[in-house]
Amino acid sequence: MANPKRRHSNSRTRKRRTHDKLTAPVFPLDKNLEKGGRIRSKRYVCSHCKQVNQPHTVCHNCGYYRGRQVISVER
Image (cartoon, rainbow, N blue to C red):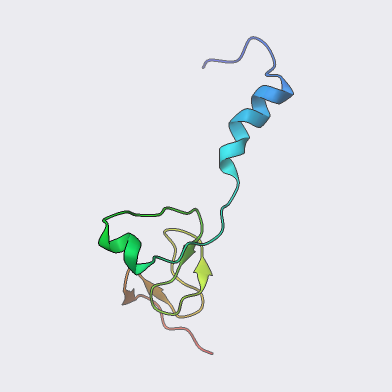
């Protein structure tokens, strides 16, 4: 296995980590969708209940994933 020969500097580590921060949730606007543009965000909004949740996970509020109900959630 490859191991680094020397330690990375703090500035080099921070430059790499600048892209890891979460962005605000983006609601798709009709005019953006008409132009074919897609706005990407690391935080996603559920298409069913409009709650913010993590990408590629079932919504904990309503139980929907990709437009269909996967689990039943008791309220």
